[in-house]
Amino acid sequence: MLDGPQLVMRRLPYRPEERKHLSRLIPFELESDIAGDIQSLHIAIDAVEPETVTLAYVDREWFAEQIEALESAGLEVSRCFVTGQLIDGDKDDWKILVTDGADDGWLPTQLSGLGLSVDVSMLPLVAERVQREAVAGAIPALHVFASSQSEADDIVSMLPESIRGEARTRVSIVNEPWDALTFERPGAIELRQGLFAAPVRWQKLWRPARIPVIAAAAALLIFLLSSFIELQINNADYRRIQQQVEQVYRTAVPQGVLVDAEQQLRSQLAQLRGSGASASVLPLLDQIAPVLLQHGDVRVHRVNFLAARQELQLALTAQSNSQLLAFSEALGNAGLSAQARNISQAGSRQQANLLVSGVAP
Image (cartoon, rainbow, N blue to C red; front, side, top):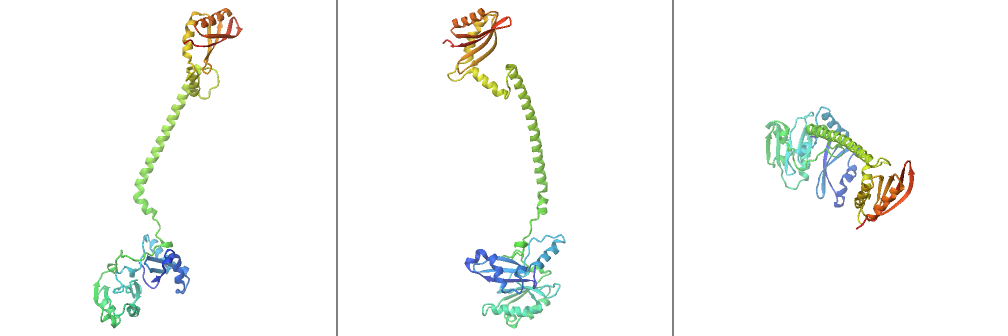
């Protein structure tokens, strides 16, 4: 709480169109009334009324020193008020709080509804001025807070006779000045605003949140670690399965380029099975197999099925050309179209490519 000559409170009128820009206009309104640099002042604004705004201003450097003195001692200054405003009084109900400060002379009062800190010697003049500006004929009620009855009587005796003789006077004995203050009084100006707004106390917020945050961080770390380990295990399993697939593919197709074993097998199976109107290789093999068993000297070295042309290509070898031709003729008798091509000598045996198509219905 602040009081004394360093802090001034006042009301300023304003026009409705200026309401949105009050924080920027107020320094210019005060500049003509202040004998000094307006930039050296800290200005705090109260709740804005329809036509007037209540404000307090104090020397910025001095105010910073007061806060620093407390916080350097380990205290946290979260809020700051004018002492006079925490005395619950107004222009019709005067409250005077007698305090024994370092200068032994300040009286935080609530004479005008704004709140003042008045030197003992200045109390008669201030009270007379406030009474003169009040509504004509209005006699205020007077409530004095002091540590003793004699101290309260001394203060009352200093008031002008026009006030002392007519006002209803009440005295409250308080052990400490704090007992006379209302700390949650509506309308009290919070001085810690703007550049002097109370900082976020991260350390204060960290203390109660420390254990939950550490527990959450540990849980997240465990989750990430377990996910990483699981990912490594799955990758190892995938590589092992891929190796097995490639081994199976090489068992079926020893020659040729290997890029994607699974996809290549699917493509080759699709060619053998056919699709839609395409014929399948199985009916052809079903008719060729009995004929092949009857011609034991004919050996099949390679089979290739072209589903698009419904054609089966066989790479054959036999002891003689007559055996190859006899096998081709037997297929024709079985209802298939067989054409022998590229008959040539391969060592002691004859080889040929046989194109088989035309499955009988």
